[in-house]
Amino acid sequence: MHARIGIDGGGTKTEFILTDEAGAILTRRIAAGCSPSLTARADIDRLIAENLRALLKAAGNPTITHTVLCMAGSRIFWQEFAATLTGIGHVQAFDDSIPVLELATNGQPGIVLHAGTGSFVAARGLDGSTHYAGGLGWRFGDAGSAHDLGRRAVARALLELQGWADSSAFGQAVCDQVTLHEVNAMLRHFYSPDTPPGALAELAPLVTRLAQADDPVAGEILSTSIGDLARLAQTVSHKLFGRKPSETLPVGLSGAILHALTARVVTTTILGPAHELRLITEPPIEGVRRLLSRI
Image (tube, rainbow, N blue to C red; front, side, top):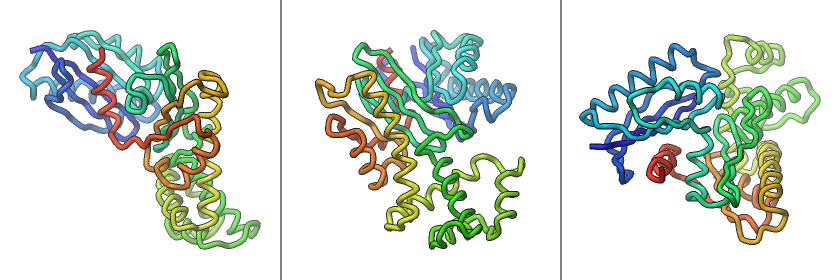
């Protein structure tokens, strides 16, 4: 039997699927994250190798014709990594944006905005070429992401504690969640090397929940952050499709943050009526499966 392997790797988890040539999933595995910015190379090597062996064994060790890696982190790293893999057919490495782009456009021209722990905008042009914008990592913004929402939330709470912003229920909620109610204590915590970058992202659900409940401060933070991401998508759209696309473009919204009503309203307002918003509810690994079936 001939089969294909798809891998979707991020900072939080790595998902493996094995499909038949028609695209049906035969078996799958889920493992820890494998982003090269967060995980040592030796650990990545071990994680990929162990799970590939287990995946193949579970399916009776079929002959693999193609393997696709859709991975977070350095494109150069993953291309070099892919070149080291043998015995699993023709191996290709893609950015982690490709699966959600596949879900948003079904291989046609269009755009996708993704907001998870990080964020990015991806697009497929009229000529079939793929493009990537943003996704610069937590140190450089990632507008609309969980990290950006958390960063803005803590910044607001700190200004309230300093007395330079009006006290609010939102600021109190932030302090209560992190169990810190004093400026220097909060600064020490978030600047400590023992506090992972993901600690800020853990505040994102609080921001979106309070924004949905019409909290004005949370609503402003969410609107401002999503607005920056939507304006990046607007720039991508203008450069690839012109200011007045000849046809309505599909725009996929991936991630719970972008599914919030406030986020959808902001995105619609900035992009305009020539863009048809579609909520992506399927996981990225489904985009990997579709990509595999088209190879």
